[in-house]
Amino acid sequence: MLKYLDAGTGSMLVQMAVAGVAGAAVFFKIFWAKVTRPFRRNRPDDVIETEHDHAHQGSQPQPADD
Image (cartoon, rainbow, N blue to C red; front, top):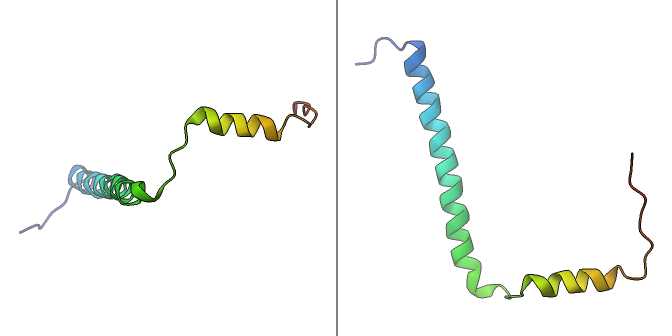
């Protein structure tokens, strides 16, 4: 059936394999997010930023690394 694979065919097979792995990764990431959604705490972003700001109010600003 497949007696000869030229460079274009091999490249297409590699591209299909990479696309399959990437697609599966995205599928499982979305699937896992849907599975774990009921178990997560819903916190608005401004609460997280406010807590972060309060934790660092007493510290001195750090100099930038040049």
